Length: 202
Length: 202
DNA sequence: ATTTTGGTAGTACGATGGTACTACCAAAGT
DNA sequence: ACTTTGGTAGTACCATCGTACTACCAAAAT
Image (tube, rainbow over all chains, first blue to last red; front, side, top):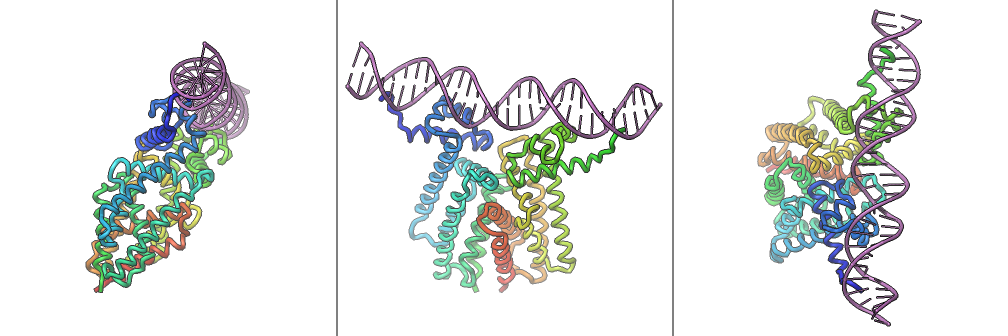
């Protein structure tokens, strides 16, 4: 065997080249040629490490999703295990707002892909539904905790409130992506609503 | 002059053929050839009525947006001028949920286009920001009215609440589009939140 | 030393895209 | 009647895409 090339490393390199292009020029600008050029390889190398463009795209997407998932867990961990449930919720939902470059790319690529999956049967839509559903139950659980500790009003329905929060933060993320709002403004709105929930006791 | 062809009519015909394709096969399936075939014309005819594909796309988008705008105004009118401000808000936001085919196509095409506009400088993002901004001020005004009449709590900030409602309904629309929720479930969440706002007096 | 074999590079093929070009047809103006 | 002109159709050009194919190179195995 000749040069020892770490396949995992190469695949990651290529995937990140793809994400750089998708983040700057859009998902439609992602071609075998552009990715290869960005990664500094020949097209055949990209073909060598990925059977097809579709496989490449899927891998890059999962790669990004995994990194974002780690990021979220990291931030939640930073908030400390002693943090209040509502604080945890704020931390998680805040990640839906594209504040830095990696987050921006994540939301752009994910939204692009999600939109495509609506009409393209080849792009299974399942991965897009699994994560949000888990999120919703997790947030609902936090809200239940918060309700039990009196942090939020007893009249609130955790499931519904979780749905409201999640859809809202998704919408906020999109609006920031479109340049309709700054990340700061989005965070203000998010915090406003969380404060409202916390304040509405009686 | 030969056959009297109503240019406006033809352009509308072609635009609707485009929307039919975009709604079923996705915006990426919209090509000069597919649109011409769907409309029952030769490619040159489409070229004749629209200078370029970009112009065609923009026209179709505005065409759709206009029809949706009329629909919203219609529904609001149906609700009656005597309807409560909160009722008007519910009617408007309910339109953000893709319940029928036309609405589904509208949100799909609009979202597709919006995502493209993030990275494509040719697709001016302005038209996407103008409408939502007007919406927000309109809804904020309704909320102000509702606050004055005691329909909602005095502690609420109309601007922020309007932002919350709009981003939430946008997120709801997307989730329905992705098949994550049914239109009915989305409406339930919307109504839940509106009821919460109305109930939180003290 | 020579034969595998993992990895890289260049090129070519078929399909599809937007657009340009030319021909054709029929009704209106003369 | 015939010429102009609005509208329609077919075709061809050029670019770009994903992919397949072949050649090449260098290190490990024999």
